[in-house]
Amino acid sequence: MRKIVGFGLIILIGLLAWSGYQSSANKSAYTGETTVVKVGDEKVSVSEAMIHLLLMRSQIESKWGTKMWTAHTGSDSEGKQITYEQSVKKDVLDEICAEKTLFLFANEKGYKLSEEEEAECMSQAKQEIRGFDSAELISYGITTEKLAQHYEQVAMGTKIYEDVVGDFKAVYDENQFKVATVEAFLFPTVEKLSDGTYGDLDEATCKKIKKQAKKARKELERGASIKEITKKYQVSFGKDYGVLANSVDENVWDSLRSLKKGEASPIYEIDRGYVFAVMDNPDDKARSTEAIAKEVERQRYDAFERMYKEKYQDEYDIDLEEAIWDQLPLAAGDE
Image (cartoon, rainbow, N blue to C red):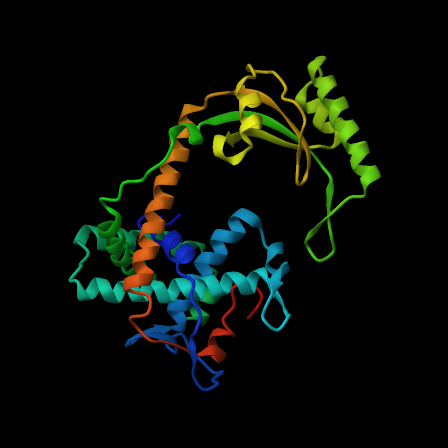
């Protein structure tokens, strides 16, 4: 979705979380040009902040839908419950401040985008703006040019990232990143509660569920189809599921890797219930390569995070217009 800054935004939102914003006097009326936060002398307008919020909304809702926004994710220091929307909005504010900080440093270092990079940012902006709600574009003064400027600033920050971690050498054990592809059957021993969390079922029910798992596995071995098993037991089914070696107990991994294609694993007890798997590919090399690439990038992020905290994070004062920020919507319908 974000071609030119695909990993840039992930870096910024994932690794830069800090507190201590300075709140200015309460203000409530605003336009698209109203300043909502300052990083050093660099101002962030409502339009610019809403670009971050709307892109994040699109990214999350395309994957998870809209119902998760009101789910509770924890409590604040006063014991008040925090919703998923509030949690993500805090992440977006961190992202905005980090992006501006890196942009300022990029300018100081004399980084510049080529004409080709600027054209790519504009092209991306023209494509992305089609997915925005037209009423919100008008309401917050968001234009294609402003969206392109957003991508240009992130691209500038990404140049610093690449310079810092370009020669970084990741260290890992290839055996820990081998992947076996299976078809998994989960018999849950938890239930979703009214507050969105999960609770364990009672012991008697859990025993019945374990018996169901054993029975389903036997039926599968005797020739029942996957479709028949999932329909009969209303069981959660994970098709083409990749099991990473370092994500499971060593004994579990060894037993999985010993299976031939089509063979069923023993039944394993996990924190959510009972699960068994049918082997598809005990040595999925393509997924192993992908897993190693992710690990290398994770280590690069960690190295950059350390550098960022040591060198950049506290360099500029951050001044937040909290009354305005609190009014800016993340979930649709909050306006």
